[in-house]
Length: 504
Image (cartoon, rainbow, N blue to C red):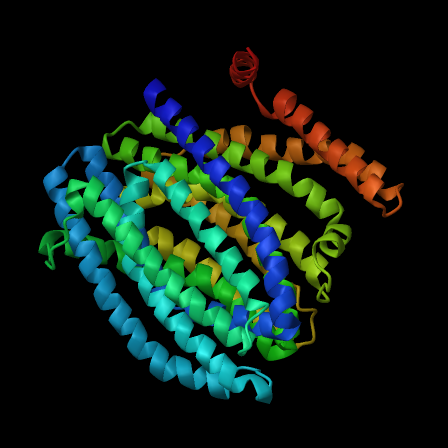
């Protein structure tokens, strides 16, 4: 267990270095893209890309199945089965890419040209973006098993290097877009597609050279395919509900308010991705250990990992989000030359929603680890699917565009309650223990950390000096409260020892 904990800590650190580099580069890249494309084209690029990614409701369930079964086989130590699982996964993704292509070029193309709100002058460019996005998405589907085996093998350093290379190249692409004599939206989309092909080749070469199970053969392991499709068949409900909530919300906003408000939500997503990346890195390092410990029947350690993972995920996200939530308008003005309307409120709501999601993710991993997910997905996925119709009704009666995210926050809280009740029956999860160790701690940390920064914020003018003072007090207040209220004695001792050790 000690070795596993060290591995989680080491991989988390590697991924944090990755995230710091990615966050700085991505924030600057977003500024350049918005400046190069303009608000309208930026909104078009994001809504079309989001529309294409809606098809992940088809692939998302299989992706989770691939990750789960690869990690499960490694936990069991069954290399022969692992090799069969990997080859079956790549074969499935190739067939899925073909199915996606057929759907996207028929139903998807019709919806894009006849239902979505696109300015007449940008129809041609939008169709180019759509075609390039289709190819990029197909390449990403085929890459998924290779990414999954890197994470399952917990080789986070190569994952970090590849991710940093990816954002650096995207920065160069965004920078070069400013100077192209051709249509900037078409040029940007085309280069992103070419870059996706290059990344696919790099991942494939690395995995084949370093992991014996990655010698792909076009084959089907019937028994494992049956298990994977059974798992994926039920998991598609959860994948579809998540996509409908996020990308379906983008479509609704486009239908009722047009691409300019889509640009505002895209800005919120950029901020959210930059901040929540820190939590996702931690959970990426945690997930293989949860599944592997379930596979080896070490359930108590699995529960301990999930509870600490949920609690520290919230602490990390809250620590980073508090300065953004209090100073959203000023940060956006500082970051962007032209801030789309509704951006600030979207940013604040999306960060609150992310806090619910980050606490839920370790418990979702436990459910997926069991493989028995029919009832779980029917109930939790079914509840989450209500996001789209409820948001549509609210927009239809004249609500503000931010209602899409407000509805998502309310439904996330309801889903969390349902999730815990189901896991109690699935794996004997102690709900009282979850409330005590996770929710009560999160509420105390959130409230106590916010008091002093909020009082300072409301009594300050909007200047760079006051903004820096706000940020400093946010970080100091949340650090002290997390350490002395959110952590127990053993955790504080561990943190102090590590800090002293690093200083020495």
